[in-house]
Length: 299
Image (cartoon, rainbow, N blue to C red; front, top):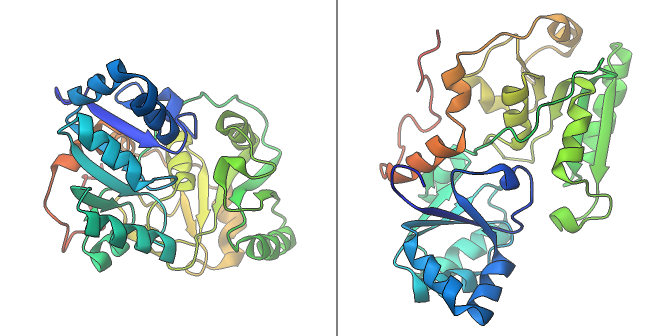
């Protein structure tokens, strides 16, 4: 419960990423929601206690919203925390025709503005304390291929020429946690304990903040990113974030050797679950300050 509002998050899997560490809101998978509606009428009555139900786009099926509508008068939100691909845009169009979703949000402020959606950032909760180990690598990139494998290997060679090491963990497929080689998130984070920084390779025309950015902020790791827009966010500091395609690559070794700049704690807290939820009740569409420039005073 947040500010006396009961909130439910419906995700592809309630054990993905840091979701099992969320205590501020309830989390359920779409398949569990279907099971409740099919087999347990007592649990369906519990759905009526929620005032806000947020469906994550990954794994979302409009059927889930129809199920909820039978048992709850909650405001229903579809939150896109992935890039709006053609498939996602079809989902957006189809659900708008049905009128089953009350509001739509995107984690990407530029795409939100482009498609007339509300914007809310991604969110994060630190679910582990990273073990203190002597780093074995300068940078780590981990994630699904999504067209990034070749870029990662080219960068690995270029970084090697600069005397920097890059550890790569790339899996194939578009099935998320069903992909061969997928690691549970807690095991994935073990890689971060062995590196000084995180490499973030954005998908084409993606601008929203990813989990890689959140991990860098919350675990105080250096971030090397292809996100050219990140310089416009209030937490940007050149000692912490190196922008490929903007900063001269030969300056990367010096960047990695600089101490991490400690940020105002409010800059990080902005992305924690309770504040993320509160922003769903700010119904003003962000037309001008849509990248949250200087939304928190940097001290």
